Image (tube, rainbow, N blue to C red; front, side, top):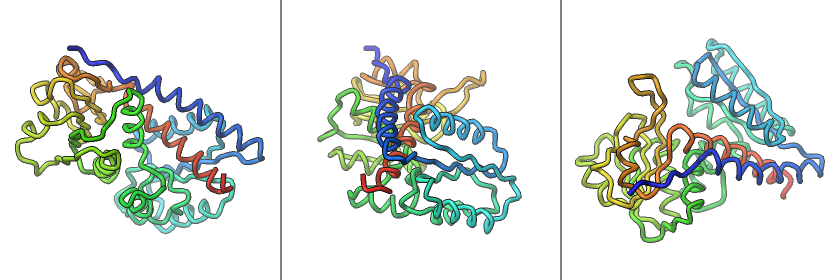
Amino acid sequence: MTAQLIDGKALSQQLRNDVRQGVATLKSQNITPGLAVVLVGDNPASEVYVRNKVKACEDTGMHSVLERHGADLSQAALLERIEALNQDPTIHGILVQLPLPAHIDAQRVIKAISPTKDVDGFHVTSAGALMTGMSGFWPCTPFGCMKMLESIGYSLKGKHAVVIGRSNIVGKPMALMLLQANATITVCHSGTQNLKALTLQADVIVAAVGKRNVLTADMVKPGAVVLDVGMNRNGAGKLCGDVDFEGVRQVASHITPVPGGVGPMTITMLMMNTLLAAQGSVGA
């Protein structure tokens, strides 16, 4: 068996067409969805992510504002900027690029963003909405994973899904989304004993810990679906995920590549959330 690839790049382009249509509809009503991206410091990876997000806004017809601040920006000054963006009617989504400099409390900053503009889905209000099954903004990476499963017509009802990782950004919300889709969930982490015994039971595995080869072929049940959220570099400096791709693709039924898998979906779901925020601002 050789796994079918779930092409995140192709799927993201399909979904961006839907976003473009939604943006065009709002523009016909004199409303242009707007996203503000706030970058503090000069983290090279953050620079790449921010550039891709601004480019995606242009690609879908949205208005974007990129605010760059030095690493010495005070927390108070950053909170002031967020409040100004909260009050700006041309901005429907606010994204503060993480990580932030050590002297800034990231949770305090996220909490300061208006829940109606929390297009990253990190605010405690968004987390609470997901937890209780209410409508709200879903974190973009796990939201993209759910769209990928949907794209292959995969029904999660009654399936056993194993999530490797428990971060607030991916692991925890991923587990909740899978649970809402009627899967049975196991969440594994650094304290889990005998990870292999658990992954071998899984119909779906989501690897999201940021560690190379955390999932190898001998840990995967034949026919399982594997979603690789990791973003690492191998010894040659080449991008790779958390999964031993070449080995696992010989066992799984479907697998996401790195790059070209979950990554493009994350930015596209950000565009979708920003569109939803703009629609919500006018009751559309």
